[in-house]
Length: 137
Image 1 (tube, rainbow, N blue to C red):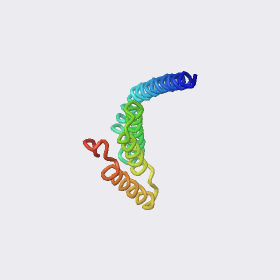
Image 2 (spheres, helix red, strand yellow):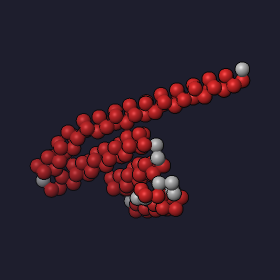
Image 3 (spheres, rainbow, N blue to C red):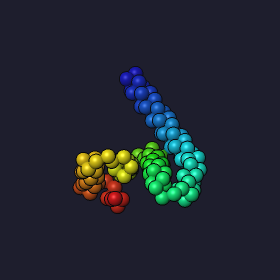
Image 4 (cartoon, rainbow, N blue to C red):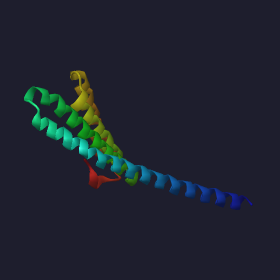
């Protein structure tokens, strides 16, 4: 009786795990689909930078870079959802911090914290993340 309950419990766990994996894959495809749709906005922003005078194009270029880096973070997130490796998580965090540093750093304190965070990520990847040694950043 007890073995049958344990067997049923393990079977239910397996079904739930497979369902969660399929939902993650679906979410990854939704992220990728949304990113593909957002490429149109990048093209429009790129053309706007080209047509705008130099003084005004700085702000448009900043929006372009912000949007581009956000799409890169989204792609890395989709890869992380599908692959389930610690290295992919580190890459998502790395790109998110880089985006924050490049786009919205208001003063040197923000940049210093970003550099420290990046150094910690590289340290973790180099010395603590040993399972995926071939894919070190």
